[in-house]
Length: 221
Image (cartoon, rainbow, N blue to C red; front, side):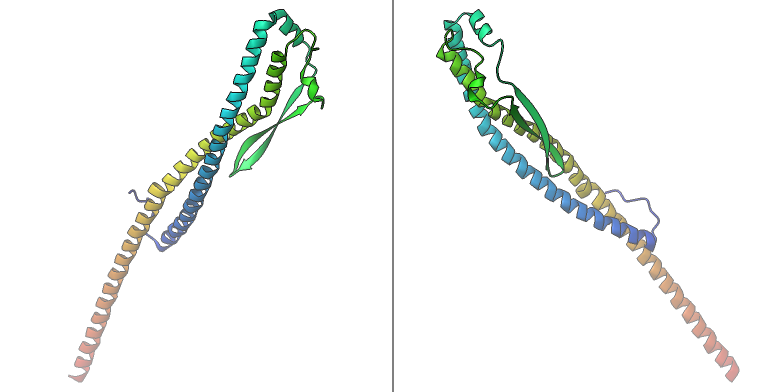
């Protein structure tokens, strides 16, 4: 591991120890965030999987009914029946925060509240298969929007999980070991300097004692 290029002083030692404490706390919080993001992501993916199967089943039924209607009715009749829709759907998009990630929330607003307004034609010149196709598409629309919401949320959470994972790894394998190695190096330097000072003081003390003994000897001679 690389060490930080700092002077081996007590002030730097205190500063790096503080940085290590902050990095360690940040590492713990980011790991908790990563784990919670993973839990949320897996919950969303499980719901999306079940919903996709339901949506695909509804779309298959709608396409089957529309194909049957197309085989019975002329294309001009179907186009004329669907030309002027009574109903209109407005998509509204809001946001929901999941672990600092703003994921989309889709909702719809109908122009009218009457359920029969999904049919823009009379029943005299169309068959039941076209009605069934329109009803199937109308029923699957909320689930289709919910599926789009879930898949976009999963995509955004996956990106945040990857970013968080990189930060966790940077702290765990680079920054924290560098701080620890630097603290160890500075501590060794300071201990070595302290031992050298102690040895030097002991030598000075021994010299002073020797001078005092020599002085007393001369005074008593």
